[in-house]
Image (cartoon, rainbow, N blue to C red):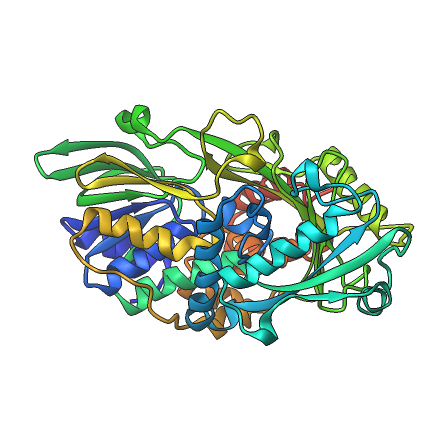
Length: 484
Protein backbone atom coordinates (compact mmCIF):
# COMPACT_ATOMS: atom_id res chain seq x y z
CA UNK A 1 0.00 0.00 0.00
CA UNK A 2 1.31 3.43 -0.93
CA UNK A 3 0.70 6.69 0.89
CA UNK A 4 -1.30 8.28 -1.93
CA UNK A 5 -4.61 9.93 -1.18
CA UNK A 6 -6.38 7.85 -3.82
CA UNK A 7 -5.19 4.59 -2.30
CA UNK A 8 -5.92 5.77 1.24
CA UNK A 9 -9.52 6.59 0.30
CA UNK A 10 -9.86 3.15 -1.32
CA UNK A 11 -8.51 1.56 1.84
CA UNK A 12 -11.01 3.50 3.97
CA UNK A 13 -13.92 2.09 1.94
CA UNK A 14 -12.81 -1.47 2.75
CA UNK A 15 -12.77 -1.11 6.52
CA UNK A 16 -15.85 -1.62 8.68
CA UNK A 17 -14.42 -0.60 12.07
CA UNK A 18 -11.08 0.78 13.32
CA UNK A 19 -9.35 0.18 16.63
CA UNK A 20 -8.22 3.81 16.80
CA UNK A 21 -9.05 7.14 15.22
CA UNK A 22 -6.43 9.88 15.52
CA UNK A 23 -7.81 13.36 14.87
CA UNK A 24 -5.18 15.80 13.66
CA UNK A 25 -2.22 15.38 11.33
CA UNK A 26 0.48 17.33 13.14
CA UNK A 27 3.60 15.83 14.65
CA UNK A 28 1.88 14.42 17.74
CA UNK A 29 -1.01 12.88 15.81
CA UNK A 30 1.37 11.43 13.23
CA UNK A 31 3.62 9.89 15.89
CA UNK A 32 0.54 8.47 17.62
CA UNK A 33 -0.53 6.80 14.38
CA UNK A 34 2.97 5.40 13.77
CA UNK A 35 3.23 3.93 17.27
CA UNK A 36 -0.30 2.50 17.33
CA UNK A 37 -0.05 0.86 13.91
CA UNK A 38 3.40 -0.58 14.66
CA UNK A 39 1.77 -2.47 17.55
CA UNK A 40 -0.81 -4.02 15.23
CA UNK A 41 -3.73 -1.69 15.94
CA UNK A 42 -5.95 -1.00 12.94
CA UNK A 43 -5.59 2.79 13.01
CA UNK A 44 -6.73 5.76 10.96
CA UNK A 45 -5.75 9.44 11.08
CA UNK A 46 -7.95 12.19 9.66
CA UNK A 47 -6.78 15.78 9.12
CA UNK A 48 -9.16 18.55 8.09
CA UNK A 49 -6.53 20.49 6.12
CA UNK A 50 -3.17 19.22 4.90
CA UNK A 51 -0.85 17.27 7.16
CA UNK A 52 1.55 19.54 9.10
CA UNK A 53 -0.29 22.64 7.92
CA UNK A 54 -0.67 23.97 11.47
CA UNK A 55 2.02 24.50 14.09
CA UNK A 56 3.96 21.47 12.82
CA UNK A 57 5.21 23.37 9.79
CA UNK A 58 5.37 26.80 11.42
CA UNK A 59 7.85 26.27 14.25
CA UNK A 60 11.38 27.59 14.72
CA UNK A 61 12.53 24.08 13.68
CA UNK A 62 14.25 23.47 17.03
CA UNK A 63 14.35 20.19 18.95
CA UNK A 64 15.66 22.13 21.92
CA UNK A 65 16.00 21.25 25.56
CA UNK A 66 14.31 24.46 26.69
CA UNK A 67 17.02 26.44 28.45
CA UNK A 68 14.67 29.41 28.62
CA UNK A 69 12.31 27.41 30.84
CA UNK A 70 14.87 27.08 33.63
CA UNK A 71 14.06 30.51 35.14
CA UNK A 72 10.44 29.30 35.32
CA UNK A 73 11.73 26.36 37.43
CA UNK A 74 10.43 23.83 34.91
CA UNK A 75 13.32 21.48 35.66
CA UNK A 76 11.39 18.31 34.92
CA UNK A 77 10.35 19.56 31.48
CA UNK A 78 13.92 20.63 30.64
CA UNK A 79 15.41 17.33 31.81
CA UNK A 80 12.79 15.38 29.88
CA UNK A 81 13.54 17.36 26.71
CA UNK A 82 17.31 17.01 27.02
CA UNK A 83 17.08 13.26 27.55
CA UNK A 84 14.62 13.04 24.66
CA UNK A 85 17.20 14.62 22.33
CA UNK A 86 19.38 11.54 22.75
CA UNK A 87 16.51 9.21 21.87
CA UNK A 88 15.44 11.26 18.84
CA UNK A 89 19.01 11.36 17.58
CA UNK A 90 18.84 7.57 17.25
CA UNK A 91 15.33 7.43 15.77
CA UNK A 92 15.14 10.29 13.27
CA UNK A 93 18.32 9.86 11.23
CA UNK A 94 19.02 12.93 9.13
CA UNK A 95 15.86 14.59 10.44
CA UNK A 96 17.79 15.18 13.66
CA UNK A 97 20.61 17.69 13.27
CA UNK A 98 22.83 18.85 16.17
CA UNK A 99 23.05 22.62 16.37
CA UNK A 100 25.48 24.94 18.13
CA UNK A 101 23.86 28.01 19.69
CA UNK A 102 25.76 31.11 20.69
CA UNK A 103 24.34 33.36 23.42
CA UNK A 104 26.00 36.80 23.55
CA UNK A 105 25.87 38.80 26.77
CA UNK A 106 25.74 42.59 26.36
CA UNK A 107 26.27 45.28 28.95
CA UNK A 108 22.98 46.95 29.97
CA UNK A 109 20.96 44.33 28.08
CA UNK A 110 20.70 41.36 30.40
CA UNK A 111 18.77 38.37 29.09
CA UNK A 112 15.01 38.45 28.65
CA UNK A 113 14.23 35.15 30.34
CA UNK A 114 16.37 35.75 33.42
CA UNK A 115 14.42 37.09 36.45
CA UNK A 116 14.64 40.87 36.70
CA UNK A 117 16.63 40.70 39.93
CA UNK A 118 19.49 39.13 37.91
CA UNK A 119 19.29 41.44 34.89
CA UNK A 120 21.99 43.90 35.94
CA UNK A 121 25.49 43.87 34.48
CA UNK A 122 27.04 42.01 37.41
CA UNK A 123 24.54 39.18 37.79
CA UNK A 124 23.36 38.53 34.19
CA UNK A 125 26.47 36.62 32.96
CA UNK A 126 26.66 34.65 36.21
CA UNK A 127 22.96 33.78 36.12
CA UNK A 128 23.19 32.61 32.52
CA UNK A 129 26.33 30.62 33.32
CA UNK A 130 24.55 28.93 36.21
CA UNK A 131 21.67 28.08 33.92
CA UNK A 132 24.02 26.43 31.43
CA UNK A 133 25.71 24.42 34.16
CA UNK A 134 22.29 23.18 35.23
CA UNK A 135 21.37 22.54 31.57
CA UNK A 136 24.42 20.31 31.11
CA UNK A 137 23.69 18.49 34.37
CA UNK A 138 20.04 17.85 33.54
CA UNK A 139 21.10 16.57 30.14
CA UNK A 140 23.84 14.35 31.67
CA UNK A 141 26.15 15.73 29.02
CA UNK A 142 29.70 14.50 28.65
CA UNK A 143 32.58 16.94 28.81
CA UNK A 144 32.83 17.46 25.05
CA UNK A 145 29.11 18.27 24.87
CA UNK A 146 29.04 20.82 27.69
CA UNK A 147 28.73 24.57 27.22
CA UNK A 148 31.78 26.80 26.74
CA UNK A 149 32.60 30.40 27.63
CA UNK A 150 34.11 32.41 24.79
CA UNK A 151 35.67 35.84 24.67
CA UNK A 152 34.64 38.83 22.59
CA UNK A 153 37.40 38.09 20.05
CA UNK A 154 36.38 34.45 19.76
CA UNK A 155 32.76 35.53 19.35
CA UNK A 156 33.74 37.84 16.50
CA UNK A 157 35.59 35.04 14.72
CA UNK A 158 32.49 32.87 14.86
CA UNK A 159 30.04 35.70 14.05
CA UNK A 160 31.88 38.54 12.30
CA UNK A 161 28.75 40.70 11.86
CA UNK A 162 27.61 40.50 15.47
CA UNK A 163 28.02 43.93 17.09
CA UNK A 164 30.99 44.25 19.45
CA UNK A 165 29.91 47.39 21.28
CA UNK A 166 28.98 46.53 24.88
CA UNK A 167 29.56 42.81 24.20
CA UNK A 168 30.99 41.34 27.40
CA UNK A 169 31.33 37.65 26.54
CA UNK A 170 29.38 34.80 25.00
CA UNK A 171 28.42 31.23 25.74
CA UNK A 172 28.11 28.32 23.34
CA UNK A 173 25.89 25.34 24.05
CA UNK A 174 24.42 22.46 22.11
CA UNK A 175 20.84 21.81 20.97
CA UNK A 176 19.28 20.40 17.80
CA UNK A 177 16.97 21.19 14.91
CA UNK A 178 14.72 19.32 12.52
CA UNK A 179 12.61 19.85 9.41
CA UNK A 180 9.23 19.82 11.11
CA UNK A 181 6.87 19.22 8.17
CA UNK A 182 9.14 16.54 6.69
CA UNK A 183 9.26 14.84 10.08
CA UNK A 184 5.46 14.67 10.06
CA UNK A 185 5.38 13.25 6.55
CA UNK A 186 7.98 10.62 7.43
CA UNK A 187 6.05 9.52 10.50
CA UNK A 188 2.92 9.16 8.38
CA UNK A 189 4.61 7.30 5.56
CA UNK A 190 6.09 4.85 8.08
CA UNK A 191 2.65 4.32 9.60
CA UNK A 192 1.00 3.74 6.23
CA UNK A 193 3.58 1.92 4.13
CA UNK A 194 5.29 -0.05 6.90
CA UNK A 195 2.45 -0.71 9.36
CA UNK A 196 -0.67 -0.57 7.13
CA UNK A 197 -2.35 2.40 8.82
CA UNK A 198 -4.66 4.80 7.00
CA UNK A 199 -4.05 8.57 6.89
CA UNK A 200 -6.07 11.04 4.83
CA UNK A 201 -5.86 14.81 4.53
CA UNK A 202 -8.70 17.24 3.77
CA UNK A 203 -11.19 15.21 5.79
CA UNK A 204 -13.20 17.24 8.28
CA UNK A 205 -14.98 15.52 11.13
CA UNK A 206 -18.47 16.93 11.51
CA UNK A 207 -19.70 15.03 14.54
CA UNK A 208 -18.99 12.11 16.85
CA UNK A 209 -21.60 10.02 18.66
CA UNK A 210 -21.22 6.98 20.90
CA UNK A 211 -23.32 3.83 20.85
CA UNK A 212 -22.32 1.50 23.68
CA UNK A 213 -18.56 0.95 23.12
CA UNK A 214 -18.38 2.14 19.50
CA UNK A 215 -17.98 5.69 18.22
CA UNK A 216 -19.74 6.66 15.02
CA UNK A 217 -17.87 9.43 13.23
CA UNK A 218 -19.47 11.59 10.56
CA UNK A 219 -16.97 13.25 8.24
CA UNK A 220 -16.80 15.26 5.05
CA UNK A 221 -14.29 14.94 2.23
CA UNK A 222 -13.42 18.59 1.54
CA UNK A 223 -12.27 17.76 -1.99
CA UNK A 224 -15.18 15.60 -3.22
CA UNK A 225 -17.61 17.47 -0.91
CA UNK A 226 -19.26 14.15 0.02
CA UNK A 227 -20.20 13.10 3.56
CA UNK A 228 -19.58 9.65 5.05
CA UNK A 229 -19.53 7.77 8.35
CA UNK A 230 -17.06 5.36 9.95
CA UNK A 231 -16.90 3.43 13.21
CA UNK A 232 -14.01 3.35 15.68
CA UNK A 233 -13.38 1.88 19.12
CA UNK A 234 -11.03 4.52 20.57
CA UNK A 235 -10.21 8.16 19.78
CA UNK A 236 -7.12 10.29 20.41
CA UNK A 237 -7.55 13.95 19.46
CA UNK A 238 -4.33 15.81 18.70
CA UNK A 239 -6.15 18.90 17.50
CA UNK A 240 -3.67 21.60 18.51
CA UNK A 241 -5.39 24.98 18.76
CA UNK A 242 -8.75 23.60 17.65
CA UNK A 243 -11.68 22.39 19.74
CA UNK A 244 -13.15 18.92 19.47
CA UNK A 245 -15.77 18.51 16.74
CA UNK A 246 -19.54 18.51 17.01
CA UNK A 247 -21.24 17.65 20.28
CA UNK A 248 -17.87 17.12 21.99
CA UNK A 249 -16.83 20.75 21.54
CA UNK A 250 -17.95 21.71 25.05
CA UNK A 251 -15.61 19.06 26.52
CA UNK A 252 -12.52 20.49 24.79
CA UNK A 253 -9.44 21.42 26.82
CA UNK A 254 -9.24 25.12 27.70
CA UNK A 255 -6.33 26.63 25.81
CA UNK A 256 -4.45 29.87 25.33
CA UNK A 257 -2.65 30.71 22.11
CA UNK A 258 0.97 31.72 21.70
CA UNK A 259 2.02 33.17 18.36
CA UNK A 260 5.44 33.32 16.75
CA UNK A 261 6.61 35.14 13.61
CA UNK A 262 9.54 34.13 11.38
CA UNK A 263 11.44 35.46 8.38
CA UNK A 264 13.45 33.48 5.82
CA UNK A 265 16.58 35.28 4.64
CA UNK A 266 18.25 34.14 1.44
CA UNK A 267 21.59 32.45 2.08
CA UNK A 268 23.71 33.58 5.03
CA UNK A 269 23.56 37.39 5.07
CA UNK A 270 24.32 37.50 8.82
CA UNK A 271 27.40 35.30 8.34
CA UNK A 272 26.27 32.82 10.97
CA UNK A 273 28.68 30.25 9.51
CA UNK A 274 26.48 27.30 10.61
CA UNK A 275 26.04 28.73 14.13
CA UNK A 276 22.67 29.65 15.60
CA UNK A 277 22.31 32.74 17.80
CA UNK A 278 20.08 33.37 20.78
CA UNK A 279 19.51 37.13 20.67
CA UNK A 280 19.16 38.17 24.31
CA UNK A 281 16.45 40.78 24.59
CA UNK A 282 13.81 42.49 22.50
CA UNK A 283 12.10 45.75 23.31
CA UNK A 284 9.18 43.83 24.85
CA UNK A 285 11.34 41.42 26.85
CA UNK A 286 11.37 38.39 24.57
CA UNK A 287 14.23 36.51 22.99
CA UNK A 288 14.86 35.88 19.31
CA UNK A 289 16.63 33.22 17.29
CA UNK A 290 18.78 33.51 14.18
CA UNK A 291 19.24 30.00 12.80
CA UNK A 292 20.89 28.54 9.71
CA UNK A 293 18.45 26.31 7.86
CA UNK A 294 18.95 24.39 4.61
CA UNK A 295 21.30 26.97 3.11
CA UNK A 296 19.19 29.92 4.23
CA UNK A 297 18.56 31.70 7.53
CA UNK A 298 15.52 31.79 9.81
CA UNK A 299 14.85 34.76 12.10
CA UNK A 300 12.12 34.07 14.62
CA UNK A 301 10.52 34.84 17.95
CA UNK A 302 7.73 33.38 20.05
CA UNK A 303 5.26 34.29 22.78
CA UNK A 304 3.17 36.90 21.03
CA UNK A 305 -0.35 37.24 22.40
CA UNK A 306 -1.81 38.32 19.06
CA UNK A 307 -1.51 37.00 15.52
CA UNK A 308 -2.78 37.89 12.07
CA UNK A 309 -4.93 35.65 9.92
CA UNK A 310 -6.89 32.65 11.21
CA UNK A 311 -6.11 29.65 13.41
CA UNK A 312 -5.86 27.58 10.23
CA UNK A 313 -3.77 30.09 8.34
CA UNK A 314 -1.95 32.67 10.45
CA UNK A 315 0.63 34.92 8.81
CA UNK A 316 3.35 37.38 9.78
CA UNK A 317 2.00 40.85 9.10
CA UNK A 318 3.98 44.00 8.33
CA UNK A 319 4.40 44.84 12.02
CA UNK A 320 5.78 41.36 12.72
CA UNK A 321 8.25 41.62 9.86
CA UNK A 322 9.38 45.13 10.82
CA UNK A 323 9.83 43.98 14.42
CA UNK A 324 12.10 41.11 13.39
CA UNK A 325 14.17 43.24 11.02
CA UNK A 326 14.54 45.97 13.63
CA UNK A 327 15.91 43.58 16.22
CA UNK A 328 18.29 41.88 13.83
CA UNK A 329 19.76 45.30 13.10
CA UNK A 330 20.04 45.91 16.84
CA UNK A 331 22.52 43.05 17.17
CA UNK A 332 24.13 42.74 13.72
CA UNK A 333 26.19 45.21 11.67
CA UNK A 334 23.93 45.17 8.65
CA UNK A 335 22.29 48.11 6.89
CA UNK A 336 19.81 46.37 4.62
CA UNK A 337 18.01 43.14 5.37
CA UNK A 338 15.86 41.57 2.69
CA UNK A 339 13.80 38.46 3.22
CA UNK A 340 12.24 36.07 0.74
CA UNK A 341 9.30 34.86 2.83
CA UNK A 342 7.73 34.85 6.28
CA UNK A 343 5.40 32.72 8.33
CA UNK A 344 3.57 32.76 11.63
CA UNK A 345 2.72 29.82 13.85
CA UNK A 346 0.28 29.40 16.72
CA UNK A 347 0.71 26.84 19.44
CA UNK A 348 -1.76 25.81 22.07
CA UNK A 349 -0.81 26.27 25.70
CA UNK A 350 -2.74 25.12 28.73
CA UNK A 351 -4.96 27.92 29.96
CA UNK A 352 -3.85 29.56 33.19
CA UNK A 353 -4.37 32.73 35.16
CA UNK A 354 -1.18 34.21 33.70
CA UNK A 355 -1.53 37.04 31.21
CA UNK A 356 1.87 36.29 29.71
CA UNK A 357 2.08 33.35 27.32
CA UNK A 358 5.81 32.96 27.97
CA UNK A 359 5.13 32.17 31.64
CA UNK A 360 2.65 29.38 30.86
CA UNK A 361 4.00 25.84 31.12
CA UNK A 362 5.16 24.15 27.89
CA UNK A 363 4.32 20.80 29.44
CA UNK A 364 1.57 18.70 27.90
CA UNK A 365 -1.70 17.45 29.31
CA UNK A 366 -3.71 14.38 28.30
CA UNK A 367 -7.35 15.25 28.92
CA UNK A 368 -9.60 12.23 29.50
CA UNK A 369 -12.80 13.18 27.68
CA UNK A 370 -14.37 9.84 28.59
CA UNK A 371 -13.26 6.21 28.71
CA UNK A 372 -11.60 5.47 25.38
CA UNK A 373 -11.40 9.12 24.24
CA UNK A 374 -8.57 11.53 25.12
CA UNK A 375 -7.47 14.93 23.89
CA UNK A 376 -3.83 16.02 23.93
CA UNK A 377 -3.15 19.61 24.92
CA UNK A 378 0.01 21.70 25.19
CA UNK A 379 3.55 20.38 24.81
CA UNK A 380 6.40 21.30 22.51
CA UNK A 381 8.03 19.82 19.43
CA UNK A 382 10.86 18.05 21.25
CA UNK A 383 8.41 16.03 23.34
CA UNK A 384 6.21 14.71 20.54
CA UNK A 385 7.17 11.05 21.08
CA UNK A 386 6.53 11.13 24.83
CA UNK A 387 3.20 12.93 24.40
CA UNK A 388 1.97 10.39 21.86
CA UNK A 389 3.16 7.51 24.01
CA UNK A 390 1.33 8.77 27.08
CA UNK A 391 -1.90 9.34 25.16
CA UNK A 392 -1.85 5.82 23.72
CA UNK A 393 -1.22 4.27 27.10
CA UNK A 394 -4.21 6.12 28.52
CA UNK A 395 -6.60 4.35 26.13
CA UNK A 396 -4.89 0.97 25.54
CA UNK A 397 -3.42 -1.49 28.00
CA UNK A 398 -0.25 -1.89 25.92
CA UNK A 399 3.29 -0.59 25.75
CA UNK A 400 4.08 1.74 22.87
CA UNK A 401 7.23 3.27 21.47
CA UNK A 402 8.43 4.89 18.29
CA UNK A 403 10.53 2.68 16.06
CA UNK A 404 13.49 3.97 14.04
CA UNK A 405 12.12 5.81 11.02
CA UNK A 406 12.53 4.54 7.48
CA UNK A 407 12.30 6.61 4.28
CA UNK A 408 14.15 9.55 5.88
CA UNK A 409 16.55 10.02 2.97
CA UNK A 410 13.68 10.04 0.47
CA UNK A 411 12.13 13.20 1.86
CA UNK A 412 15.31 14.90 3.08
CA UNK A 413 16.72 14.67 -0.45
CA UNK A 414 13.72 16.21 -2.20
CA UNK A 415 14.89 19.20 -4.20
CA UNK A 416 13.58 22.70 -3.58
CA UNK A 417 13.29 23.15 -7.32
CA UNK A 418 10.17 21.78 -9.00
CA UNK A 419 10.41 18.81 -11.36
CA UNK A 420 7.70 16.47 -12.61
CA UNK A 421 9.24 13.19 -11.44
CA UNK A 422 9.60 14.51 -7.91
CA UNK A 423 6.03 15.80 -7.91
CA UNK A 424 4.73 12.41 -9.07
CA UNK A 425 6.75 10.72 -6.31
CA UNK A 426 5.23 12.95 -3.60
CA UNK A 427 1.70 12.30 -4.91
CA UNK A 428 2.33 8.56 -4.63
CA UNK A 429 4.25 8.41 -1.34
CA UNK A 430 3.41 11.65 0.57
CA UNK A 431 -0.32 12.08 -0.07
CA UNK A 432 -0.07 15.30 -2.11
CA UNK A 433 -3.62 16.33 -2.99
CA UNK A 434 -3.09 19.98 -3.93
CA UNK A 435 -0.17 21.91 -5.46
CA UNK A 436 0.51 23.78 -2.22
CA UNK A 437 0.91 20.50 -0.32
CA UNK A 438 3.99 19.93 -2.45
CA UNK A 439 5.21 23.53 -2.60
CA UNK A 440 4.83 24.34 1.11
CA UNK A 441 5.10 21.12 3.13
CA UNK A 442 6.78 18.31 1.13
CA UNK A 443 9.38 20.75 -0.15
CA UNK A 444 10.26 24.37 0.68
CA UNK A 445 9.88 25.65 -2.86
CA UNK A 446 7.42 28.42 -2.05
CA UNK A 447 9.26 29.46 1.12
CA UNK A 448 12.59 29.72 -0.68
CA UNK A 449 11.35 31.50 -3.82
CA UNK A 450 10.17 35.00 -4.58
CA UNK A 451 6.41 35.44 -4.83
CA UNK A 452 5.74 31.97 -3.47
CA UNK A 453 7.09 30.22 -6.61
CA UNK A 454 4.13 31.21 -8.77
CA UNK A 455 5.91 29.98 -11.90
CA UNK A 456 6.19 26.51 -10.41
CA UNK A 457 2.56 26.63 -9.33
CA UNK A 458 1.52 27.47 -12.89
CA UNK A 459 3.54 24.57 -14.31
CA UNK A 460 1.99 22.15 -11.84
CA UNK A 461 -1.59 23.24 -12.39
CA UNK A 462 -1.17 23.33 -16.19
CA UNK A 463 -0.15 19.65 -16.16
CA UNK A 464 -2.10 18.14 -13.27
CA UNK A 465 -4.98 20.40 -12.22
CA UNK A 466 -7.67 22.77 -13.41
CA UNK A 467 -7.54 26.55 -13.52
CA UNK A 468 -9.77 26.67 -10.44
CA UNK A 469 -7.08 24.81 -8.50
CA UNK A 470 -4.56 27.43 -9.61
CA UNK A 471 -6.84 30.14 -8.26
CA UNK A 472 -7.35 28.28 -4.95
CA UNK A 473 -3.61 27.71 -4.55
CA UNK A 474 -2.86 31.31 -5.47
CA UNK A 475 -5.25 32.42 -2.74
CA UNK A 476 -3.54 30.16 -0.19
CA UNK A 477 -0.10 31.57 -1.05
CA UNK A 478 -1.57 35.07 -0.84
CA UNK A 479 -3.03 34.40 2.61
CA UNK A 480 0.32 33.00 3.74
CA UNK A 481 1.86 36.34 2.85
CA UNK A 482 4.06 34.74 0.18
CA UNK A 483 2.79 36.85 -2.72
CA UNK A 484 3.60 40.54 -2.67
